[in-house]
Amino acid sequence: MVVVNARAGASDVRLVAAIAHDLRNPLAAIRANTQLLRLQARRADPSLSAWLDFGMAEIEEAEARMEQLVDEFVELARIQSGGSLPLNRRQTDLVELVSDAISGVPSSSGRHLIRFVPNEPTLSGHWDATQVWRALENLLGNAMKYSPPDREIVVSVAREQAFAGNWAVVVVCDQGRGIPAADQAFIFEPFWRGSNVGLVAGSGLGLASVKQIAEAHGGSIVVDSREAEGTSVTVRLPLARAAEPPNPPNYRGRDRRPEANQGRN
Image (cartoon, rainbow, N blue to C red; front, top):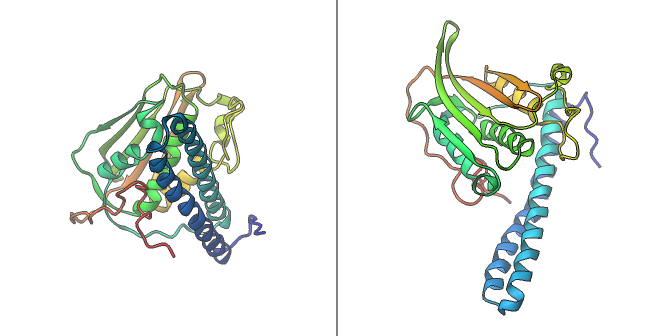
């Protein structure tokens, strides 16, 4: 068993990342075989097909939850290590990255409606696409968890020019339960959860992780929330000075995260 504490260092984070990699391998096998079984189920006796489909959906949901727990374990190690977050910076089109992150959210085509508002056709900067993707996943996940299914979630991307420099701005705005005013001083504390979350599952690491990622890039995060009305989260990332063409994105396919197509042993 690996215990991650507040004094965890870089070696602990590397160990946790290695363990997470090994845990993801069987999860990937479960996912692949479930997809294969689902295809076979559709060719089976119609009386069995619906039952098999239901069983496959249960397995897929459990696999997705396990992968989320692994990701949260890694996030916890990074946050509590106290060190700087290592970044693999390269030219990245934020508009495309956000669009693909929204497309990769299962509920965006089901229970929740997510509307994307890009105010620029492209917006490229020198960022770590994998880390920014992780921040987007956290923000979208929070917006869906704490919003009723019939309420729209709006995600916008814009360019902002200010005295301090030029920024790429991502805003995720929901119409959910919001954060009580008395709780808002603690929203970036690891494991903190609002007093009104009820039975909604969560680790309390999401906003702490987004803050770490934004600040590692030289950016910031601002949360504006009103209980019973909704929450708006604004993340600012510094724009790259050099106008280089973005690298071809490598987050295609079923698992659209940037690191998904990197080889897994």
